[in-house]
Image (cartoon, rainbow, N blue to C red; front, side, top):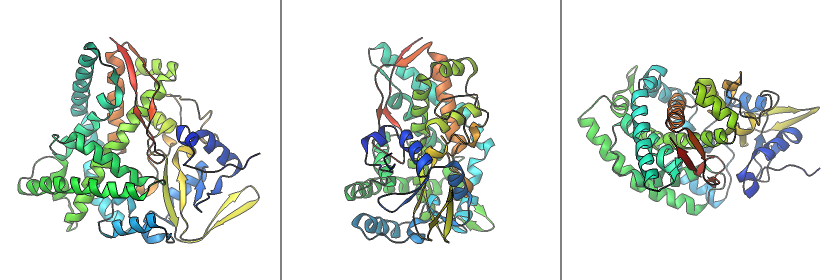
Length: 408
């Protein structure tokens, strides 16, 4: 048998990573990649690492430095800016999460449902008119991108006049999350930030003068035990919401709709019963938009593989494969089958776990639920009009084109 490898440069891996995940999980579940990164594909290992205090998310601070031009450039970029909440450890992470979490409570998110429904209905109205005029319904451009963008813009009270620029900036910036990032990508991301930050600075400055009922005003005013977000922390968090927040939801909507179209009996179940929270969890488990996240052990750690013990030194990079873990057959029966009634779908790791569990998970699930239910309610026929086109990414996985044939 050929020894399985983790090779994100392999086009076959990018097209469908699950056969590779399966091979690694079965034959080499604690795999050392060619680049020296430890890749974990078993659910138990991934969940343990994500929930353990023995691992750091602050890669630049905790990992052994890699001396190459790309890593050196990334270190320079991060030294010049405030770290995102995604890349902080306690107590800094605890402090920031406490300050911003009130805006993401279940009740706060549920109160957004009428607004989300309105944006979805308007997007479908416009798309349906274009279909009548002879155009093809394109899910990503027509619904999956504009709805999350409008929602986060409304939540933050941001102007929507620069939607096309913001979409481009978002895609450029999220490329830097990929393990395949190059120097050219970093240069493009710097240019994107140079365009994005003045726009955000102007908006924040205006909002400080005229506080409203939006989330940005709440973040400006957020205070806990005398502590507030600094100006730099506020900008960094707004960038995270604007970029990572809506980008993930775009892919959740696209991937979920494609999964349903490829499983007709599940599509019919969704038509008949709608999508409850468990059903959306199953869609996240089946093909989640975030495929992996990296942690760094702060102390030497060990993994058991059969009779063998694998030692991992402090400071090594450990890649936890969320996509592989959520398809582990020891946890999920028949994992490559979409089953909206799966009893343990909520055990998926699509939103990670532990202290870094996705802050915006409830919002992403709400938007996906409303978008897909509304699409299926409006059209009696929804079918693939062409083969989907996948974004050339590994960390953020999603279709970038999904043409649909629809009929009332």
